[in-house]
Length: 433
Image (cartoon, rainbow, N blue to C red; front, side, top):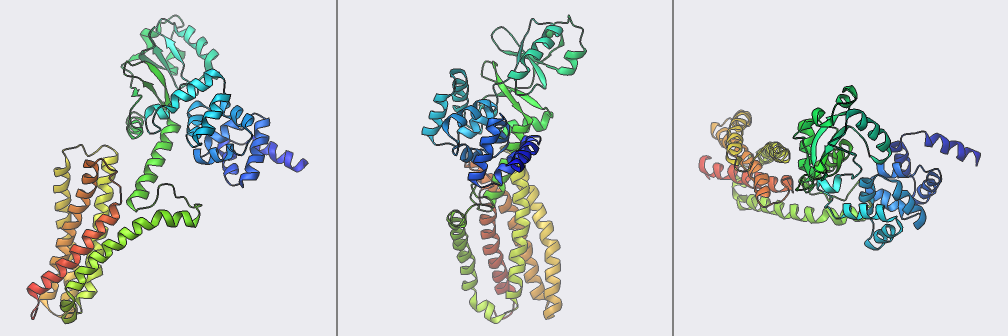
């Protein structure tokens, strides 16, 4: 018993993120027991806020309703909302009904915003300073309000109606003469985020301006809350994971510890689709069975031409998808990007084609075979550049994620057309075909 108390004391001095990691690695029963001890020491809220929302939601359901409610009340509102969104509706409403009226209203209002918008990311715990304050009055006010704010990086100045008028860095506020009015210190036209802005757009703003926090405003520029850099890091991580998963047909919910039967159910649809496209490529090979029978050497070059086309195409898909995600490819600029990738495909195709063409010529001592594989490689590399550009642009035009199954669609084209180019050129140039 004494050893458990010592271990708990050692754990309590750790950072909440380290405690969250410990909780994540325990069984549900042991994690719930540890969380109960943390709750008794008023130390459970921060670690839960550091965990993945689905994990913290699973854990809080293991506690009795009174403990769960009190822990949730101590969490930062944005973290509490993320947890609540993972709970069943009946349990969510039950917990909200046990919170005090103010807390319940705050969380209910935040729950109304879609989770992938600025409103879904923000914390309403922001300190607003009246425009008429002096620098010294503002400093004294901030000292009194530190417990009510999630974090204070900048001071936000509002008018009598609560509209955002400007922002002041804490450095400027501290160094200013005590009697200086905030209206003279603040930077007007402060960068802000509309409450309905997409989470990815919010992340781009942070990347562009390198701020630690940004204010969130409504259509009338009324200050609603604040988004901090830690929330944006979560968005960037989640969006990157989503793009990687979707580009390879992996279910978004799957993780390394997902049960095998769940993984099978999620992956099989894409694998069946990939199997269908593989049959399409195989049908091209079957159509040229007599060609392969006469020149079996063509079978040697089939995976080389198809594989190089797939590799080159994936480079293009990756670059274009990233550019779209970062806002570097405005709508209407697709033709410029397509022309660039067309030139790259031609140059890469000629470079690769010369190598495989030389191999074919030196191996079989025939210039014609070298020409056939050279042209097939060149044409397929051009195809890879075109298709690798068109796929993500077309998905965006259809209002779908540009990363959606890019590799599967791409290899369908590069395999099928790569084989077709090789066999058609062989029939055209090789003697006796």
